[in-house]
Image (spheres, rainbow, N blue to C red):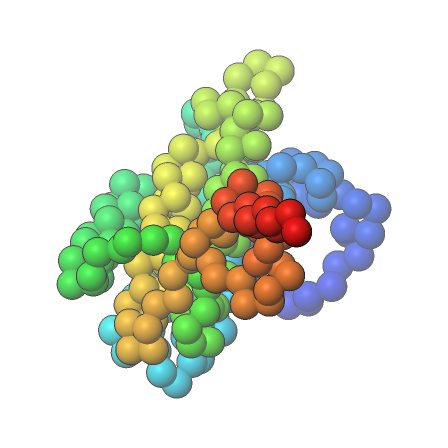
Length: 226
């Protein structure tokens, strides 16, 4: 049971905070950075769930994921311990299995991709791409925490490490959000990346400059001597 009686505490005004095991650390600690990014991703998904054009089954899926992201943040904020005083909240394998099942379910009907996708198409699709990129950032921060603290329980003189399943969860979630962005983008049409060498340049001067850079400029015919 969570009982929040007062939101401001003034205990963090000196740049310090406490992890879930009540150990004190800097607010710049990579663990704090990682679960902060998870919180940001969750906030973005909240915006996505409020979009009127979001399919109801996708909305229900994202609501479930929002709860699991709270679990993931709690996990990242709690260093591993061999003998914790109470059972900690951890990301476990069934969370990941469920994400992979959703990836298969939503991804199977989609047409094959012939290029990378540009975020856009609809506001909902763009928000899903933004959430995906924040989840990727959270995963990278989680790996920085794992590099700093390891992935093993606390030992003599060493703080506890990071639960690898929490990082795997973030990796799979970013995949699912990419797929859901594709799902929501089908009606409006997906915006595909066109590599620079294939993009048309409308302005004549810019086109000539690109041709000079690429070496594809057609040399001018010499003017016959009179």
